[in-house]
Length: 138
Image 1: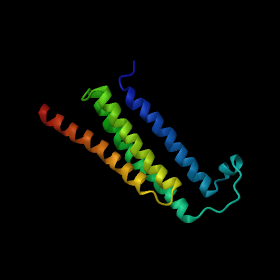
Image 2: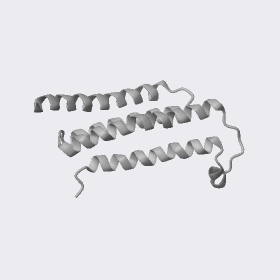
Image 3: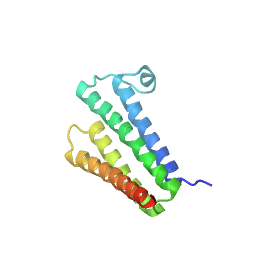
Image 4: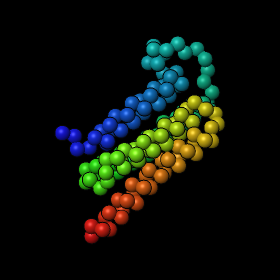
C-alpha cells in the first residue's frame, strides 16, 4: 500500500515535465541526439535558449523543495489528503505557468507573476504549517 500517494503522483508528473523541458533545451541547442529525431534547420536565438535554460533551472530549483515538504506532510499525516491535493495543484499550476512563460513566450507577465505567486504560496503555506506543528509538539 502506498502511504504517500500525492508525493508519488506529483513526483512522476514533475519528472515527466522536467524531461520535456530538458529535451526542449537539447533541441534548441542542436543536440546530435535531437537532430536524429527532429529536423533542425533554423537558428535559435541566444535569448530564446537562455529563457528555456532559465525555465528548466527554475523548475529544478523549486520542485525538489516542494516534494520534500509534501513527503513530510504525507509521511507524518500533518494535513488531510484534500488539503494537500489543493496545495499540489496550486504548486503545479505555478511551476507549469512559469516554465511555459519562459519557454514559449518572450513576455507574459500574467503567467510569470501568477506562476511565482502560486509557487511561493504553496511553499509558504506548507512551511509555516510545518513550523507551527513542530512548536505544538515540543
